[in-house]
Image (cartoon, rainbow, N blue to C red; front, side, top):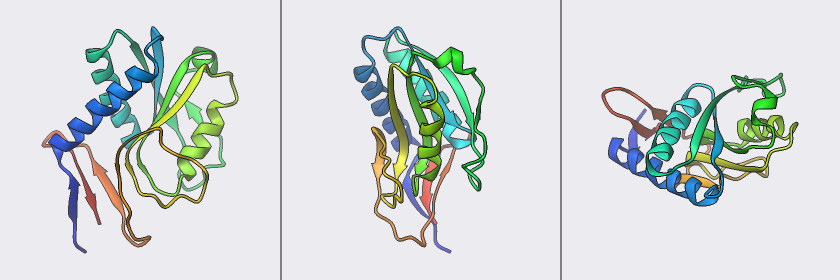
Length: 165
């Protein structure tokens, strides 16, 4: 199986910076927002975005980890923050790759159970193979791939990268 690097470490860092500026522009009037990352890679990406956002803006970014069973997304979803904490706040839901949209749309549904002031989504890679009407408001790269290809994002101390498998 061939592996093609689609984003190297520097390109990912650049995409994170750009996404952070877009979030700042969207939430410029807010003092604090919630950056909610879908567990595992989505949360790692959320951490990187929150860190960059707080370096480039006065906005305080609170992190929230979102636990979704990707094989059974209709199962109850839990978060590291209580619903009362993010009610009435601006929120960005983050995942590493937008494949079919299943994980993202179930994540969105969970957060809509409480009133959110402003809600946006962010992904590093958008594969353009959605089966649900969900979109990423902020994305690093859009990639048209075949249904048989898989995009993997690797966050590693030796260097981050995204590859097509």
